[in-house]
Amino acid sequence: MKIIGMLGGMSWESTVLYYQIVNEVVKNELGGLHSAKILMYSVDFAEIEECQANGDWDKSASILSEAAQNLQKGGADFIIICTNTMHKVAPQIQANIHIPIIHIAEATANELLLHKIQKVALLGTKYTMTQDFYKKKLIDAGIKVLIPNEQDIEVVNDIIYDELCLGTVSELSKKKYLEIMDRLAAHGAQGVILGCTEIGLLIQQEDSSLPVFDTTKLHAEMAARLALK
Image (cartoon, rainbow, N blue to C red):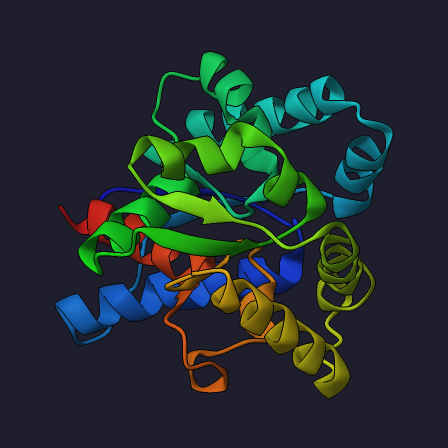
């Protein structure tokens, strides 16, 4: 079994889910008392969020590159960055290590293509929704990406940082998300990407008539399958 290097803590709420999902896949595949071989480096999210807010992506890339190098030194065979937003600096991190980074947007694109989704709604942090580092992976796969309007982008983003990253799950916030998803469906979205690793705490498939693609689950499952190859 390969050793998975988890670069987590952004936030730790979703890193917990990564650890759980990877181990569940390994247990289901191998049975018995089997569990995944994992190295985890969990950063202080306050430092990373400060970099995000200040637009200091170079500093965040430096912090995460050092963490990734430590995972590599520890014996990880590959790395997963347990967050969507910080894949913005995945190229810089990759340039500092020789083991591969498994990209969350590629895991998501693979699943969308499997379900023949041609137009998809993307929910996430404002960085993920408005910048190209994530969307381009989907567009390159031939998938059209819809994002909320400016007001709804702020609503989605604020709920992530002010509630979900702190472990707060609100029925009112769920209602707001579902209303935003309905508006995107009215514009032709055939499915919804939960493009922040915390959104799965709030929205599940049973909440929506649209197919829901939880990036945390897809990324973690891909990592587990790669570890078992």
